Structures are given as C-alpha cells and as structure tokens.
Length: 449
Image 1 (cartoon, rainbow, N blue to C red):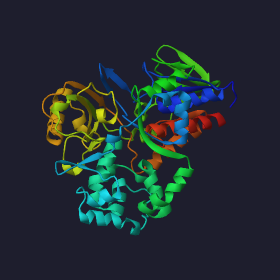
Image 2: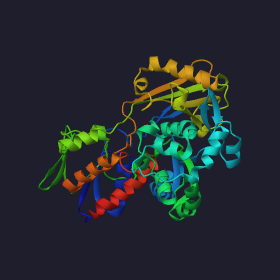
Image 3: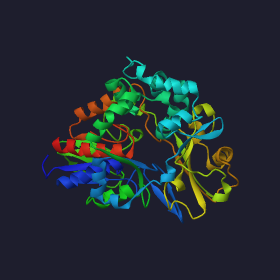
Image 4: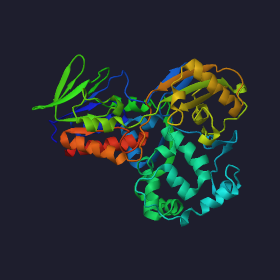
C-alpha cells in the first residue's frame, strides 16, 4: 500500500482507533467514522459530581511490552493509575458467605473455600491426560482437569466475571486459548504455568499491573483519538459498497470515498444485508453469535451503611449459589477518587448468559432485587445515596463451541471482498489489551494488503 492509498475505519472502538493511530504513524491516509459524539465504543467513563463510574470495562491488565509502548505513544501512560494494594484480595460467595480466593500455595492449603477432597483433586491435575476433543467447553476442560468443585467455585464465577456467561456455553480454545495451549504443549496447567514462565517473559511480558487512568478507562480512547488527524464523530455509516473506483461509504447525509480499504470495527449484531452485501448464509452465521444482555448498577453508599470492609477487588457469585447477581466490584477500593470521601462505590452485574431475562428488567423492578442481595452478602443498610443503571441489550460476544465456523466466515468475507478487513472483540479476544494488539496487527495487515 502506498502513502497515497486511503483507508476508511468504520467504528471508533479501541481496535479501530488503534489501527488508525498506526496508519497515521505509517504516513497512510485514513478517516475514522464514529456514530457517537465520543470515541471508545463500549468503553465509557461518566462523572457525576465526585462520583466516577464505568459503563463498560472497569480495569485493564497491563502485561505486554507492546501494549505499554502503545500507551506511551498515545500519551495515555502519563494518566495511568495502578489498582490499590488492598484491592488484591478477591472474594467468592460460598454458602452465603464471602470467602477470599487463596493468593498463594500456603493460603490454598488453609482456605475453607475448597474441601480437602477438592484440594487433593487439583494436585492430581498433572497426571490427567490430554483431551482428544479439539473444541471442548470451558466446563468440560475444568471438570476433567481440576474437578467439579473447582469448576463450580472458581471457574464458573471467573467466566461470569469476564464473559458474563457460563463455562458450559464457551469454547475453551477460543475463549481461553492460553489454558488450551498449556494443556496441548505441556500436558498440564500446573507444569505449563511453571515451565512457561520463562518463555512468557522472553515473548514480551512485563510485570503485571491492573490499571485504569485518572479520568477512568474512558480516558484511553479519548487519548488515542486526540492523536488522530482525521476522525468524524456523530457520523453513522449506514451502508458500504464496492465500486469500480474503490469502496464508498454512505451516511444519511453524505457519501464518502472512494477508499482503497475499509476496516469494519462494528459489533456483529449491527450487521445486515443493507449495510454490507454478503451471502445470506454468511449473514445468518454471523447473526448466530450470541451477545447476552447485561445490566450494570453503579451504586454509592456511605461507609457506615456497609458492614463488610470491602477490602478487595470485589466478589463473584458461583451459579450454584442461585443468586440474582453475577458479582460486584468494590470500585472505590480499586482506585482512588471514584467516590466522595466517606463513601463506597460498588459496580454490580446482573443477567448475562446465566440469567438473561433478569437483565432486561426496568430499574425500579431490578434495583430492589440487587439491594436485597447486597444486604445479605455485604451487610448493606439502607438505600443508595447515588445510583446509575446501565443496560447493555447485547454485551459481550460468546465464543461458543464451533466458533471456527464463524472465523471461517470472516476469512471468506475478506477473501471475497479485497480491501475489506473485519475487526472487533468478536475476533481474537475481548479484553482491552487484546483489542489494542489486534488493532496494531490489523494495521500491518492492511498496509501489506
């Protein structure tokens, strides 16, 4: 691709913004089109007085040199804040009580979260043979290698916290490729974790940091966008079309183009045949990807309203506990200046793939359910002094068993439409660092294209 080539980036999510940043660094002409007034997609930080809440991702795990360098290039690194040390503890609800996850081998031996039988079952993990199933569920993998107890009270809530879904609904190879690769390469999670530590360090890993930014996670897309020369906000692209002279984009007011290449960084559920002309069977496959509904409550309380010290990252609720919430983050413990002095800020998650109908309830019906759960779990007393309810009708794409078929459709669409590149959290990882790495790789692919 020459410097005279032009690239359209549809969607101002992290992947698209990252790719655009690299295009600019390469000296390539590009234009970003974002339908909202702010960039970032699902990443959004909102301030209300002294309350600072997150509508989407709350944290970012920084563990890769490439991602850190990117943050330095965009200027975001200067606003980085690291999670407080007293937020390292993570709780799991068991038998109605919050139990801290063990943080060391000594704690693992002493914890009451798992029975002696469950602990001994984990010690047998290195002697469990590899599976012959090329696309097992996360649940199948965890129960086979670690036992039912670890599946129920560690893996199940862990999956709910990341994907807002259940481990029996997700493909291990696609949702958690590191676990899959450890088994395939080393035959064991335990041996793989030990033997692979040096390799991970050599591959570009750095000391892990759980971070946000002084102005919240929303400060990241704002920082990236501030480096870009050609970004159109409040511009929704309704359709794209390939003509003889290149790609053309159509909004309700204007036509843009021609472009040599188009990076499509929009959620799969936004696609239809009016927007993008592809085969009916391909569109049906794409629309089969499930995005579970999710409700997020940001709730503020005076400290004297909560009996639990909230001395940790937050808590997760296993499905076996039969509760109406997935878990909660202790947001004001995680990072400073998220709540007024003398107050706590909690971020509570409801619904997902576990209880999708519950997520769709109106605020006035759902809030009492949430407060009842918090009263029982953390000793809450009284009504919140601050509240905000965010509803995501479609939250996080589920990398289901058979997701290879979806990835093959993406590849086929790109092969059939030269110059079209598909990007987003539906491909190669859902986390913010995943999206940054994917955006950088995509930019190289477009430049080479």
